[in-house]
Length: 312
Length: 274
Image (cartoon, rainbow over all chains, first blue to last red; front, side, top):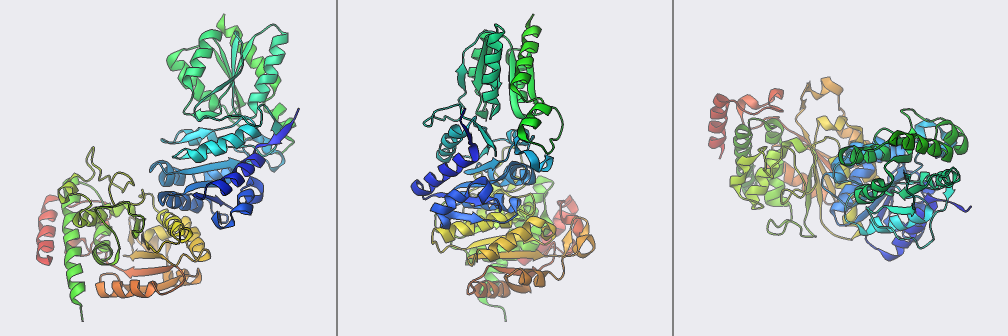
């Protein structure tokens, strides 16, 4: 299976924007080589702004640039991009609905050896709580590329989370990305597996395992967490009657919470959330960490069995 | 000697002070103290220095003003109304449900308000972004940013100060309203800022220290600040509550409005100053 890193495709998309859109300005906080905003700098160095290790300042500057008509991308690691400057994001970009895209890399425990200080497991929760924010979490590198171009065309504040490590490729190179639209990747009738980020490919693996057990699983890729594609979820759940959510993020406040909020108010049904369970991560290889923290295809399969059992 | 221009701008500043006390009293809350200390600067900027067009608030080449100390929105709203961005009668809606005049300024709600502020320590970063956009677009507009002295305790300001110097944002002029009072009292007792001027200098800015109630000094400092190729800051020694005897140097009026008897007295004094 081909594996590609989302951040590399973010860099490629930024390089394309550097050539095609003179209005785009990119900011980074001393991590351009890691976030791959360095690809933009290669093409348009005059529109690449290094702010230093000063994330709060970066968001204020981004707001000022956007208020002056620029389309601004601001990048750093997810922990810093969302946690260090949460209130700056709230005041300087979300409240005035300014055209700033905070794109973070190094989300989740797949960051690996750097450990918990660098593993963002709360970013979806704290970003989606802010009014006016759009929250995006692509499922593979090609979708990350398409999403980068899509958010550049969208006028408003956006948070997009990307991974550091190579991850399985799910889509063709020319995949389309529409903000707010879920993608059904596999049809099924017994359970709906709703994933985001690289957990989508693990949902596909889990669906294969379930098929061998005679269980028919539907798989939905939620690459826009806010606004949530409630029609797609409703349609699928009306058919299957139970759900599993899967995210490389805490079960508190993330995709699982967003789906549970919608379902409990509109079509209550069994739901089992796969994600980290109110815990920090730690150093280790991503594969070891996924096993230890319950984020494998096998965990999704087991969660599906729990949800199906609860239907009875 | 006081110039004719300064006398005229001082009168306008006192008009702003009059509005500030009237509107905060009507609202029953708000921040009159810091609004009064900044009135002379705001008058000088809006009625003399800034190149702006109230009929066309989105004009690309306009000078921009960012109110980092967003709690003194009343003085900004008063200036915008007096300039004709919106009717003066609207001022009395301050802080009321449905009013565009929110407790702290909101971009997009009020014509002439450039950025949403109110959470201290963030305005200078925003002003840096605006000044940087001007530089990227080879525009000639000026970006002005008014900071409270208390908010200089916030680390983000020092990030922005380093950034502005690094980027040589020569069309950025910051002002510090150095009235020495914050909610808990004397800034030097809370967490001391001095030597403030030397700090800005050490960070690579062009620095002026003036009497912030002397309009000729404000005009002169801005003129000089425009001749340098680095960002400039004008540290203005001011009096919190300036213009109303019992509000002067009174930290209590940072965040509360006048009671009825105080209002009578304040309006009497401010009317005399018109």
